[in-house]
Image (cartoon, rainbow, N blue to C red; front, side):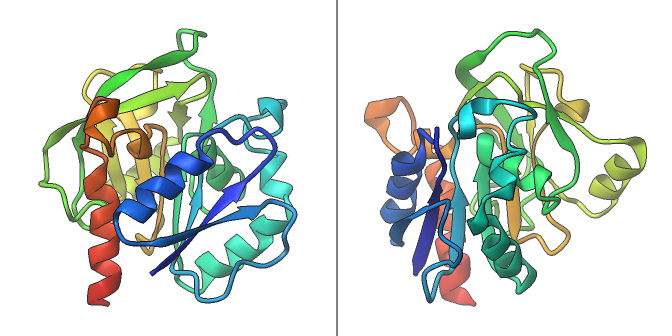
Length: 222
């Protein structure tokens, strides 16, 4: 199994995300944002957290125009798996691979702490390793994690069971407590919390490991 982890100017969780993939058995390769093609044989693309282009303008808007994102969109269009975390979630929304938008936190403050998440669906390659309704602790670290979507979009997400995670104690004002959403084909996941920061007990927890292991198991079984 092979994973590509993108690097933008300002990415700061790229190596952590690569470690998360590697611990689940992936051969993870870093890919600079100016590349125009993904490495051959890639099974999943990871878009890490950080501050792409300094988070100027709407977060993720400039990164969404990077040359590599055209290749990522084509990869997703062919049914490829894509995982966007924090700034990566913002990039996926800006490229319209996921619905909605990430706004400034309702408290207008940067939030950095462990958060309890509720597993809202297990019907995806990323979440089937959890139990529905489980509460897990995953760190958040963002200033623009306030997920918003209009009424019609929220109705679609709920009707199609595409809300992956919700916050047990909403830290940023996100609509319907949403912490992560899936694409219509369930192969693209965007989430604000950082599962790659919860794969080692020495770092405070391992409840993010199941996400990477779940994806690996799904790919092996495919």
